[in-house]
Length: 237
Image (cartoon, rainbow, N blue to C red):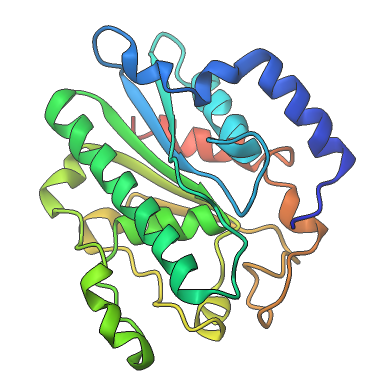
């Protein structure tokens, strides 16, 4: 389980008290369509589901940078499991999160074509968001029998609805290779809209050998990177 710093716990209390509606299904029940919707996948067993601490911080930062625009939020309802020992079961939970993310983009594109979609994710959730816009997932040979479970790529035509894609603390290429997962390769129509944030020294995203997260991996909700990412979004939404 990811160890949380005291400052992050305090941030959770403040975020939930002031912004709990941001991660609730109520956003999709609002009349009409929002100007922007943030579709965000939380990290491994991250507190404050469905958005997680980083997602809550990011959504509020996006709202602060888009005054006068309505910003809804959708927390991807997937387990964000830490059951890494059962690789098949774990892979299926990730695949479910990918399909749910893709289906949300398809739904918004059909029902709210004027809504700008912002995809995001933290840690494991960044992998989910990345796989949602993948250029093709090549499973390692030992898992070839499970190719049929791999979600197909999101149609390139939907890229016009996706304004930005943001990854916080996404596992590095080395980390992904070490655990035997397919690399995260964002397809061409979405690649120019994508930005990655990695705290210096965060062993999940900095290219270190595979292992558990360190304390630096918990800082994304409070270190200013969600605000910087929101500015990236504001230039595109």
